[in-house]
Structures are given as structure tokens and as C-alpha cells.
Length: 334
Image (cartoon, rainbow, N blue to C red; front, side, top):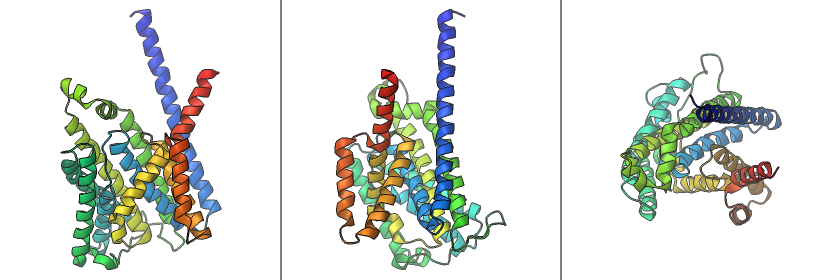
């Protein structure tokens, strides 16, 4: 073995250790923020659980938009599919175990991802946006018409999750739901970090940069993107199921175009192509929206719009992306 090869192996090992250390630090930050939130907002755990559910949706969107470059404004279809599947399992079939409801949500989200991917990936660019908008409206209308199953415009009620692992009841304060959500977020985030760093994740990034070259090398961009869409659907399904379990009701708003658009805004706000950016954008947007709407219920949208304009103009890589780039330059300069 030559000295050059040895040095390369040492460099790769060192890089892997740095990445692993960064992941552990990131997971530690997530857990620390979760603990702080639990004690800082004990009377508003429902909002924190809602933020976790939406964060899972934004993470799933980042997989297809940030890492694969697929333009979509209909990603709430995957979230809503998971929410309705978990709700229907409880309300109509008596499957009240939270883990069982979660499994139904994951399966429904993955199937919705397969359907949406099969349609959206047939086009590129602006036509993808049109197809995604059409799909979210179709999902919304289907849920509205299937009122015997979904409750239609009145929403799906009668969802009654049983005690988690037979010990922890879903109380009115939302403590169990919040802890359940934090555990799900940590597990999903850790898995996604492994996926985006795997050869499959690198392939998806390469497809985003130059799909023609990837095709000329013998790989199938569409097959890889379909796999990522299914994974994305499963992650969104986790968020939808968590939302159904924690609120015990599912409404048509979970399949709305508004939710799809807001999730894209949160992703851009934090920074695309970064799981930490997706989390950052979700937390900042939803907290800012909650505080501003409570302070000024008539003009809060104006302030939200001003925030977004400021971020796009002065932090084009998003809040997390810009901060990470700045710190990287500082390290290189030193």
C-alpha cells in the first residue's frame, strides 16, 4: 500500500469522524431544544407538537426538492394521506395503538409518494409545479367527496389513540404526544442523515446537478427519484400520523395547497438541501407566525411577508445555509 493511498484512507476516516461528530452534535441540539421547549412552554405543548409534525413534512419536502431538485407545490398530499390513514385506522377499524396508527400513516404516505412521484416525474421544471398543484387539488377533492370515510368538510373525528406502549395516556396537556413526537423526529432525522450521506443520497444530488451525465453513466435518474419520493412520502406520513394522533381530528386543511406552499416557504427560509435548514426554517416560521398573529391579528401576514423578503434578499441560502457558509469562511480564514 502506497503512502498516498494511506493518506487518502486517513483523510476519509477523519472526514467520516467529523461528519459523525456533527450529526451527534445536531441530535444533541435537537434534544436540548426539545427539553427547553418542554419546560419553557408547558402550557403550549400542542403548538410544539404541531411544529414537530410540520417539521417532518418539511424534511420530506427537502428530500425531493433540496436534494433531488424536483419542483413541487403539492407535498401536503403525502402528509394528508398519512394523517387520514392513521385517523381512519382508529375511527373506523378500532386500531387505536399509536404505533399501529403510525404504521398506517407511513404506509399511506409511501403509497401517496409513489403515486405523486409517478405523475410529477414525467415532467420537468414548471410543468412539474402544475402537476403537483393538480395532484394536491385532486387529493383534497377526493377526501372531501369520500365523506363517509373522511368526514368531508366537517373533518374526521372519533380518533382515540390508546396509551403509548400501554403505559402513557395521551393527556389533555399534550405531554405524551410531545415526547412521542420528539422521539419520532430524532429517529427520522438520524435515518435521513444516513440516507443523504449514502451512495444513494449522493446519486440523487448528482441527478439534481446533471441528470444527463448520470444517465450516460448507466444509472437511471427516474428510478432513483422514485425511490426518494417513496422515502419522502413515508417521512411525510410520519408527520401526518403524528398530527392525527396528537390532535385526534383530521381536517381537509391537512391536504390543502396552503400547507404545501407554506412548507416550501419554510424550507427556503431555513435553506434547501440541508436537513438542519429544514428544521430551522420550520421552527422560525411557525414561532414567528404564532407570536406575530397573536400580537397583531389583522396585519400579521404583512410582517411575515416582510420577514421572508428580508431573508431572500439578505440570506439567499436561507437562515441556516447562510450561517453555515459564514462559519465555514471564518474557519478557512483562520
